[in-house]
Image (cartoon, rainbow over all chains, first blue to last red; front, top):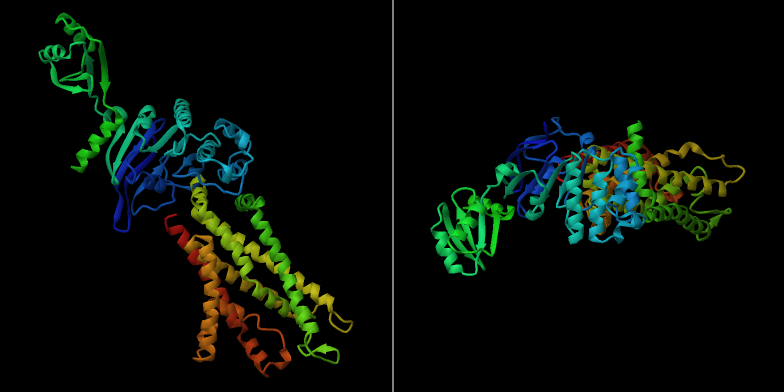
Length: 299
Length: 270
């Protein structure tokens, strides 16, 4: 599918600080595209540029294959940094303004406000909302007019655990409905659960981008335990294809040259007289992968 | 045109339920006639009278009322400035100036509709001033006087120019400072400092250019109206000769402010 958003050599400096350096990548249609990076890595700056609130020093970007325009932004639901609303107006009146700017029907307000569970408080002033409610109102504003593209910058900010789970579920449902979602976050565990593609930024430099399978290594290992751990280690040391064994808390982490085969290992241990009481296939988390990638770049 | 009205409707939605806006607007609409009434009362009752008329003349009668009311309304120019600074800095403190762009306005659309709002507010206040003139004109009218003495109606236009000048300076401070309290403080400070520079420059150092400073030049469109009989002979004629120059420079400032405000909002990071 054609690119929804395409960035070419975007650079941005704040005085002597270079916030983005020659960043280029494409966001394919229908993807859930995670922009990852620690605080200050340039994620929000990047989204600010493609939303025309910041100006790039150099480089270009296109939305839907065309140069950026105000009309395109009306069909993109965007939550950038913080929920920005008129404090003296109610949630309902704030969404009327958003709907009017976006040229969307005000009749859609009830649907989105119910979706984020704010219907009961729709007539309360924005300034009386909790942080989580403000965030939910911002998400409701994004969903007005059912846009095909959504841009979420730290969408779970200020939400409690159940709110975070709700947003994650909402993103999964939106993705299943064929929406393209661009999601900037430093909460890697959250991103890992929903993204199909990622771009990893560090200090304004794009370290890697692409579909999540190609960006992240497929490294897997097994964690095993048995009543006699010394015997288990001895047996494993003689097992072919074992590359490395680490003691980690009460288990042994067993690394292989290729893809680990849990069935074969279990059978081998049994044949050697060791009965496993714990066996689990482990995969690198996005977090550890990210730390490894960013450390490599720093070094 | 439909597009413009749609954009204006969004601004209306921002103001419709904003109580502070309506209160400040009401305060302006009440204070302009009320303040003029206080001055009218003083001029009418506190000065000696010759042949039943105050030695100050009849400043609240036609046609002089067209210059008296705008002059005293001009002293209250800080009131609409407070409202304008509040409306602009709200957008910055709520960060809605960013959100409106993100949601689908161009930067030009945002800033020019805001300036339209300032323009409409200026028209509203000017209408209040004109109505106040008519009220006092008819209140003090005698049988022998003209019905409304329209020949000095030009002072209403001058008031419009003066207020637009002040309002755009307020916008400029609001845009550059972004915080309401500080912007208002700096705006008032600027008003006082400029008057100080004008007083010192004109009377002590005898320099003429101080007459063309941003606020002074628009103030000069509406000279002090009381005691016209006591003014040095020829002063009125000199003022009359300079009016086209004052007006041109005041309008030039307005154009420069609009240009600078537009360029700055379109070019800087929000």
